[in-house]
Structure formats: structure tokens, C-alpha cells
Length: 205
Image 1 (tube, helix red, strand yellow):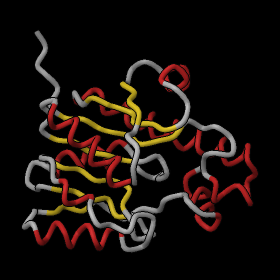
Image 2 (image 1 turned 90 degrees about the vertical axis):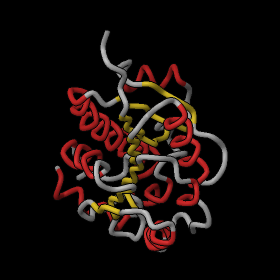
Image 3 (image 1 turned 180 degrees about the vertical axis):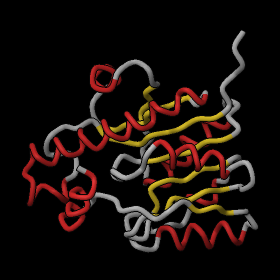
């Protein structure tokens, strides 16, 4: 009997329905173009994540929009799909972490799909950092974070944060320090959220 997997990678994304994804990029890319970019970014992230399967991680995609059937048809059956709960981003992430730790996971890392330079090596590094730290962040250049990992559920990390602002990482770190958590950091990377962010794609493709 194979041993139970104890490490999980959670990916937050949205079904790429035109007009409902990457809306801040629609003025530059158009409705269809913004949806296409989101589709490509998600598929790139999934491809990188699947390289981790050889290390006995499990992968779950928490999504909004669409249905599980549509997600399965889009991204395949090698991963598990779950609906994100209602609420703000912190509430959505907290629920995903809580469910994972309640199921017996010992390390859980959560990422989005907006960071084209987040590769499998960095994802694996996040899990390695949790051997000696309570918490790992992947800082985003816009003041947020592209990755967060925990080795136990810490609900306070997701409360009282001004989501979508340049204060997210700083506020999260302050909470972690107040809780005396040992924090590790991955290299800072850029997200693709706004028209000015599109320039970094030239570095990737």
C-alpha cells in the first residue's frame, strides 16, 4: 500500500470566461485577449505544478466561475477541483488551508496563476523551507505575495489584511512576527495584474 501523501499544492484560479477574468487588462487586450492571457498563465502554472507530482505532492485547484466539468475538460483529470468559498481573498485562502490541514496534510502551499516566472523549482523550495519554518512567503513586486505556505493552520494570517493593495505582504508579515512564527522568503517575482505588468512577459516568452 502506498504511503499517504502529506504535502499539498493549492492553486487558485478562475475559469477563463471572457469578460470575467483579468478585467483590469481588458482596456489593453480586449475581452477575448484578457481571457486568453489568463488561460495561458493558468496552463503554464499547472504545467509547472505537475512537475512536482514525482515528489509525491498532491495538487488541488480551487476555482471560481465555470463548473467542475468545465475545469476538468480544460485542465485534465490529474488534479482535484474544488469551488472557492464565498468571501474575501483571505477567507477563501483560510478555508482552503483549514480543509487541507483537517484532512491530515502536514505542509500546504498555495499559489495563484498570475506569476509567469513561478516555476516548479520555486514551488519545491517552498515545501523545503517548511521543514525549518512555520511559514513561507513568495513576495510579489506589487507588495502582495504570489505564494504562501504553512505547516499548520494559522487563521490570523488571513485576517485584517487590505487585500489587493501594496500593504498585503507587510501586514501579513507583521501578524506572523507578532505570533512568533519562523518565516522564510522566496525570491521576489512580478505578477501580471495591470497593463504595465505586461512588459515582463517579454522576459518569459
